[in-house]
Length: 149
Image 1: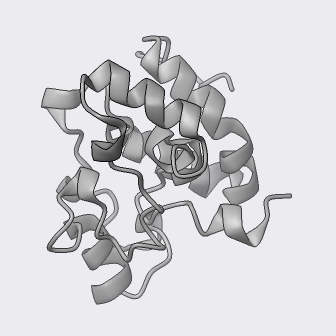
Image 2 (image 1 turned 45 degrees about the vertical axis):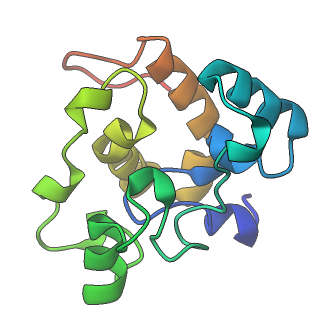
Image 3 (image 1 turned 30 degrees about the horizontal axis):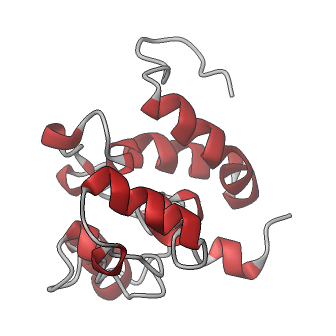
């Protein structure tokens, strides 16, 4: 069973921040250095993130200020825990960022929310690192049929 701290890292849009390299780099200096080398910038310039909920939707990677539109809609306006609980789900706020389609986990929002709704938060947290790995390797299911996890 996932801890309360892990559950707090599941954003309203279904993304599990605990699997994000920018979140993990908060405490992993080697990872922070690796990201800096990949980006070609000094380690001090690497943005590390505390997660969507702890930052109340003000994640730099999604624009920082003002608050993320998806977070504001679900949490601030509609007082929901997750987007799938909304009567308007799915909506266009959950559409993928097409220009980042091959690198951004934000493109997995709908997929993550469906898993969250169907499997629950504990299963999502358990399976998310593998889901993200498969996504980044281009092995995310593409066509109909049941998804094998």
